[in-house]
Length: 294
Image 1 (tube, helix red, strand yellow):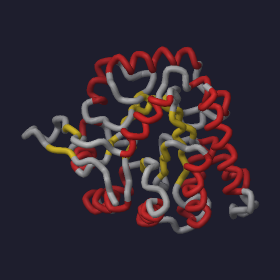
Image 2 (cartoon, one colour):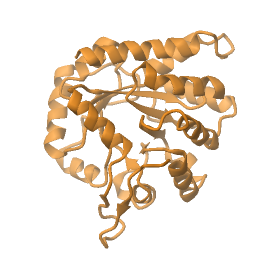
Image 3 (cartoon, helix red, strand yellow):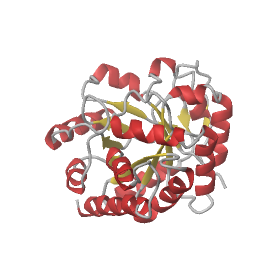
Image 4 (cartoon, helix red, strand yellow):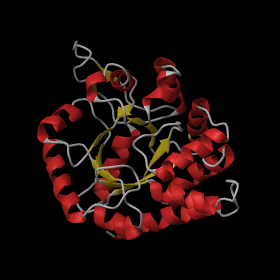
């Protein structure tokens, strides 16, 4: 059953903040991990990569392997913020015939076996816009989606997707970067909920890792501006890097490394092998162990 929180308006105009009344799965998970004194492992994989059945098996196995929050990528033909690995994963999924309805169906099926692990859909606005918005959001709630990260919808257009999502109890998670100054940060935080995603480098996903000391200083700056959990991502590839990035942060996001692991396991023509699911879950297990030791 859906236990996601609902929100209420305070008679405010469409570009003003909404107030959440109940906790979401994301809120509960970060609160529980704070009590445990460790950072969350946030894992990203692309829905439908390399095919629907293999992708469903990976998704089902992630919590048991150690994923605390799951970001599920919505395949798109022009993922401009992503590096080659995630771009290729989207193209593999699309080539296999993956549609947005398949992504939502994956979440719906996952909820039959796991009603606790938060799932965040991450991607770009175009596939949502053509769905269209209202149908997508309603089906996302019904399926059991907890949050959205839509990288090309800035706060200036929150009335388009962000506020309708919040009204349905879906967290809308924003990204901030090393170039986000304090003035812009205030705007970004206005309708952000769930957690704040700190992009530790300037550039695309899968690029070189940031200096952990620099990241720690930036996370401290963000925490002075918000009570939201702060998760650090982009460029985190190894358990050692994950452990280093976790210092001072509430979560560490790993995406490109997992997607590359999928790619490395495939046949020459891009098909899944007997090692595809196991290799991804093995890396998740090592990443999770590193954070538990941090």
